[in-house]
Image (cartoon, rainbow, N blue to C red; front, side):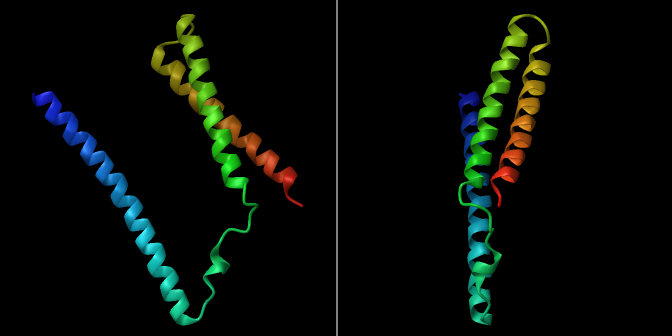
Length: 112
């Protein structure tokens, strides 16, 4: 029974922390925009001027890179080439980094 209580406490704490961070971010951003409107400053000046799909492309490429890293780490571990933790972490970070570099090159090519 003690394990279930501990797991529940950890889960609730993790979700509560995540909710708190998001809540503080949203409330702070809203107050900042209201303050800018009161002073007569246009809040749209602080929005990113990139293409609308650039963030989605970056997140998508990162997720694909991470999933390829997990797959490659599993292959390396199953073939007894590397230890489990080393194989997974190195391949996840390597392929995630490569996907972000490729995303940078794609974004640079798409910009006018």
